[in-house]
Image (tube, rainbow, N blue to C red; front, side, top):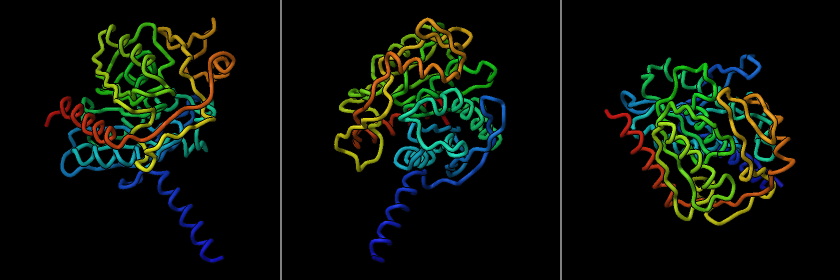
Length: 308
């Protein structure tokens, strides 16, 4: 009985460790909710040796932060000379996941958190012209929002670089207002957020004068840079899938869907989409080779923009 109890305790502890990035320093910083109330968020700060080349804000996806992704990039990018802040938008709000219910927390709210994290990095001495935002899935959509003044136009001091990994690409500005150079990372076999919807956004971003690079990684699904133990295909049958949903975003930041307008951050648009285009399920596996490649590609992109 004692052995069983010990085993279960170790299992719980291992899951708790997996659920947060390792190797960084726990920090707290202030953000704001969409209703203007204040909230204190936790983050993990990864410090380089010597003077940082720049600062990177890491934004998690719908399942929250974890060590195989945010921890991995925190360690890799800090080793490359960057001060990295991984943000937890969920914990302080009592959210564990939005994968099965995307109305639990809006992308706009997480974008507000990302700008708050950027301000924290500036307080630590990072040059305002040397900041990047990087996020996966829902966090990738945050990176898209942060790179376009259509969203949160009051944020006049913005990120110089945006690195969206397989982002949600269902909110498409009619008149993009690019503010950051972008490196968009997609998986060839992504059936969750897809390739073409994101290529369409990238093309629109470029047509509006934005600098954008898109790389599609072969034999890679959504989340291909995840836990190295998950190298076999697995199915997530209950996650909400918006790959067939498209909402236009007007110059005021309002979403237009099914002939109706929704204020930016209005989560009732999710309920409207559930009536017509939302489906369930997504396929994933980790591709360790491409994870290593994308890590090198991200470092190269950052180094080219932020030379020593």
